[in-house]
Image 1 (cartoon, rainbow, N blue to C red):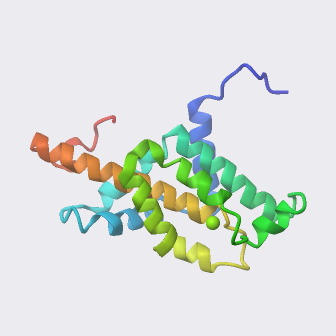
Image 2 (image 1 turned 120 degrees about the vertical axis):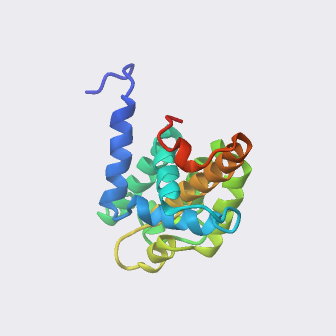
Length: 183
Ligand code: MG
């Protein structure tokens, strides 16, 4: 029995969120490629390495990790047929009126501000890269929550890059100058 007053160490949550993504076939690079596509029009010197770094930073946030854990768990339970009726059928069929997947994913982007919110909306509508692959994988596993969660992580990372690029410009620095900084 877990002691209800003891908090879960950050490292445990971080690892669990990473493991969940890996288990569902999503790699950091898949998300980084979406981030690159979203931000390259605004930042022509952007590199894929910078996008990978931004995704990794976003994946360290508890807000994001919790959303990943909840959503992926529900996808997996639905895949195993373990949800109760009628939720099982709703998640399994990714029912049109079921918006909780988007709501959880959208809730996780708020800490990254308005650029994250608008980018999330764009990705939700246009389904770029691996998001599109998840969407068209219907019949091969259940990804009702995962497609929105990937959009959420990508949107946060895109917003992080937008803000950080401006900060670096103002300081006369590039990503290469600060990539080892702990922030
Ligand atoms: Mg969905």
